[in-house]
Image (tube, rainbow, N blue to C red):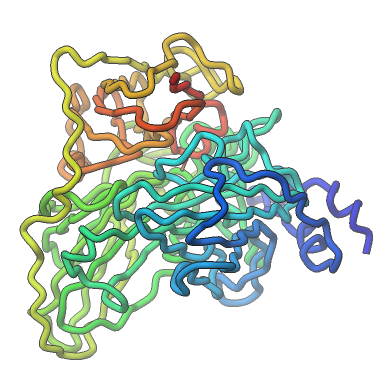
Length: 519
Ligand code: C2O
Ligand code: CU
């Protein structure tokens, strides 16, 4: 086997008549299948460097072939992990899916992860939502080259919540986040803590994890990313929308449930699609948590909006149901600015704002379970206090002719940081995003969780009642023409972090910047 050739061969983006672009992902296989393959260059540990860690694992970014649809398996890129040290339930593989293993950590643990890049191109791993040192954050400034290993160490400082990890590569030719995440490089990361455990929320089989992603497949089940010509231009402008939705890396399925409460924790791992979560029988959606963990108290909404990268924690009580009853979690119809899909070129089979099922619950047995939902949930972490003296830092989101979107007129420029992108360690600020574009943008800030202070100016539309702004977040959906204010505190870590739009095609096209926390 010719190893060096496989390492250097580039991933081929193949144009296919009539459809879009196929992901041709196989070269990396040669690397992993090769004994004596490229070995880890074991260097220093970035971030927390200690003699003892509570958890240690290997995380491989590699190519693989997995069945997704009936028929031929699909070529994917995905994560695989081996637990070297720590509680057994730290890593649960998703063997039948391209999704990375679910990593379960506890608040206060120290963690060491060896990330092995077995792909034919640079990658990084970003721990989305976690408060970790800058060097551990998976930023594009620290790429892991093909065949190399990077070791990161950190302490789990966040409160309990559903986080996730995904690639964050951005090279000279532009961003690879959209491509790599689409190819399969994403997984869930759960943080647990005492406060949450004391609430005795549904767990084990009664806690359902749901990763929503949309994908397009060609005739032989190859993943297709981005259209061609005009279609590609539209994909870049609106973000890529697949023509079918996958739940946990597979077509949505029926789940047998009992007459009792369930906790459903949902990640939107899609490149650009926004979901409007609702129940098929019209019952309210009871939201108990968001990106950064549990809300102070449950909130009933007619529906709940989940933008790319966001998470929602939902509680549903089926104790009044009868065996044989079914209930569907759906994404309901909506209009969101110009992205409504009406008359959109590229004619996606599943336009943004279509109605489709996400999961079907089928009640198959009666049980006696009285587990009332606590009236008070996550009350220990106080909101960030702000007042009229709190410094406001404004960012205007604006279109750039044919080149995507800018923030305060700027686009991604490596690690260059402008004067108004420097903040002081320990400060509390209000960041204000003003969306001067006709599209919604899910804005994400690395390294911290913020509170939403308020919104103004957005046109009232069919998503408004489902925007969950209470609690803690790392990603906020800024609607067209709207201004959203966020309260944030820069704690503990100085150095470079990133803020960007989490519509991955916007991000890859440069709607991303570094900011600097100065000690
Ligand atoms: Cu989930 Cu900068 O990303
Ligand atoms: Cu955007």
